[in-house]
Image 1 (spheres, rainbow, N blue to C red):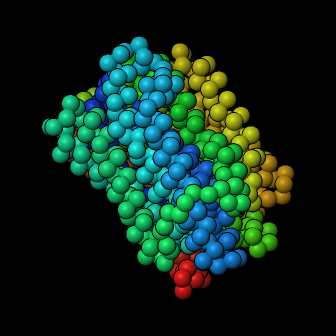
Image 2: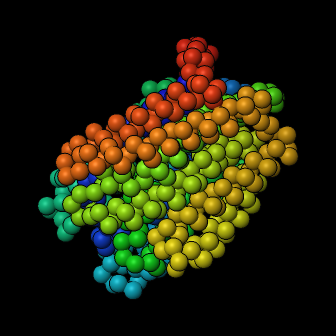
Length: 521
């Protein structure tokens, strides 16, 4: 599993780094103004559907079924199941896309009700979202083929596909902006074009893995009915974080102009560890747990969950403290140029610190949820997820006036902690999660090592940035040095206090994992 985690994590890291380059360009060209607000809402809607229908609910229902069928019935049966799923998804997603294009003004009234007070901004958001909405259809099919590859323990192509999103977005900004009304239109076209490219890459990868890619007539076979029943509750169970972020956008649209953009930039920074660690562990964990549950290896499944939590928290705990302590330098260096001024950086960094509070919980949810999904239980996380969404909404309303732009981020973090705690409690009561001696010993020591790192960053960042004040280029060098310093202190402290054993991790990586027979062989 660790190899899969690192494969997904490495590609996700590359995508996130390129994504920062894209966001730096967006910040310079759009800043935190009305066009930025409109584009980020236009991006949020298809992304919300993608993460709920595609990555969240679909993966939660499809990957365990596909992986179990592959090992129990063979590649041919798994291939037929994938084809049946493709046909139904094409039919369903096509209908959603068409309906979305027609009823976009009404959808915008729900997602960003505050925009209605500014007709020009509302109209721009509707126009941009109509351009980006086909990305929903394309990227959900991409998620389907990603699920097939993940079920085959092949993670590279699926994890690398998001690089194309950033490549096309940057190219569109630089190449199309002179020919359209503003950079928001160029970015929106880049989003949809990237969906075509990502789908093409995944179709090629699936064929290369030996699987057929055909679209039969859509039929609700018994297997498809089971899949859809499992997907329905998973829309909330696997995507509760995204629902919470959607609530953030709704509330942010009611706050002063630019708030949507401020939250977006803050969320993009915290998405680096969340995506690299959380998505990587969750993606690699689900097929492993599914096989262990299917073959009755209950103790092995508990041990796998412990190691997944350990791998996730190993980097998430220090990342959360680092983002909280160094929020302003990070946001200022990454986005502080052009239309994104110092005040925007200050406000966005406050939201980032609030998001950082919930980062370990965000990641832990991505580890705990597969423990339910691997057993076909998508209903239980729904009940917990709905409670978390309700809590997030209530906290957003309570915080929006006194905390303004900080309120949505803080509410989301508290809701994530609530969601994580409840999921863990249910798993513990069912005997599906027991913290073993290794995790109980190492977790507090990780916190101690992370605290040493955070104290070092707090003491060092002021003098380091003061020394290069007024020299923009050197700020990147100082930020890189600060990151390197934090990693070094955490590694040294962690090794000293016994939070982890780097030699043990290296030995695990060098072991050869057993190969799964490819379909068609």
